[in-house]
Length: 385
Ligand code: GLY
Image (cartoon, rainbow, N blue to C red):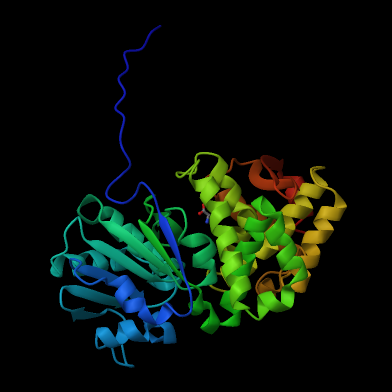
């Protein structure tokens, strides 16, 4: 039977979403951050950041230009000519639909147009929220992002995912909306708390295992320099992650297949975060533990060999991440005997999974990844201490 069909073809969505220019700045260029983010002669822009980021040394030229003092409160708004700076509260608890509406209301009050630019300056939360607000403001305004954490530089700000949390669901509302420009000031990493830096390193490890063997050997062999944040090495790490992720999102922006690989370790990580309580451990620490579990599962189902699993475990150990089935964040909350069942049940609640099996990103070896359903009993074996 022939069907009467008609296809409408579309160009890229909205202004500036057809490509992303990524600009890596040197430390000499960093003090010019204000004129880079608000170039002279441009129409009004809205800059969105949070109360932590606005106090960082790199941000002082921006804070000074807007007259922000040390006692800035969440929700404060500052003007500099046609430009507006909105400062939100920091962290996951502020990733709300109410704050998306605050960004949009502020942009409207500032007289911004569809051709105006939204600039998100912060970690994953601020980048995701500013991008989401830009994507729905008058059906799509121009977007630039300035990721200020390692996690945002190597992952969250790259590739157009936007959104906010809703009720207890992480990133439940959102869009795909790539930024026209990403500004990489690696100087931000010099003042990043050690736990947040390590959290970003876990996403770096994920990218290395998926696509970048050279990056894996940097993590294996140059631990001291990596942890000391040696500037040239850090720039190289970010660049390698961005190039690897670019090659995936260029082929599958909206995650219909290939992009799912970027969730290596995340099925386990999200279950751990749910069981431990959101925010009980940095996201990257949960991802690192999840990578260890995914590799153990890959070994148990006969995909990878022991040597590869051991190499990955050695890196987890080197950087102080948990490589055991029972994560210490659960201590005092869930016993080792109950943890397996509860983690599995959290995985099954994920809407992507059916009742008797859960889908995992697994590996044969570095740079060789498969997406596979695994039965409950086999999964339980890698969760039981
Ligand atoms: N963070 C995973 C992705 O961007 O698809």
